[in-house]
Length: 126
Image (cartoon, rainbow, N blue to C red; front, top):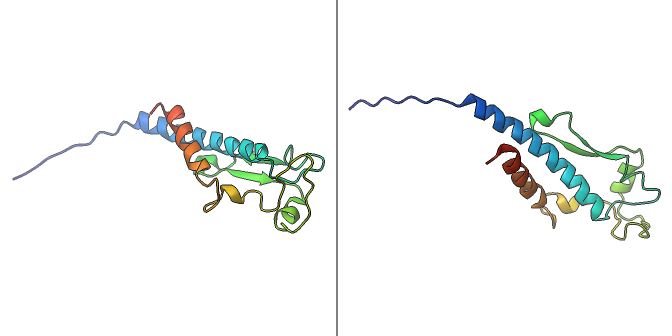
């Protein structure tokens, strides 16, 4: 018995879905940034850290990576020292390690996969 088959790839659709994945990844990064700010977990004195100093870096989005960056010199010190007594006037949930709830094992670890799935469906028309 001899069997033959041929496969034709719809490269235009594959390229559309690839671009949809990049767009979904970027939107997911923005959604995570919004989620963290709304959770009021970042230390807040003047608002600079969670405002202008924290942003989504899209520079590697075409390679499948976006980063949520806190770019101030003091962000690292605040993040890795949860023993500090953070002000809770503006952000009542302020703490060190403020991204940990969204990391694997955290209480909101399912946020990013769910957001990406929704954004990908919208962008890809799936």
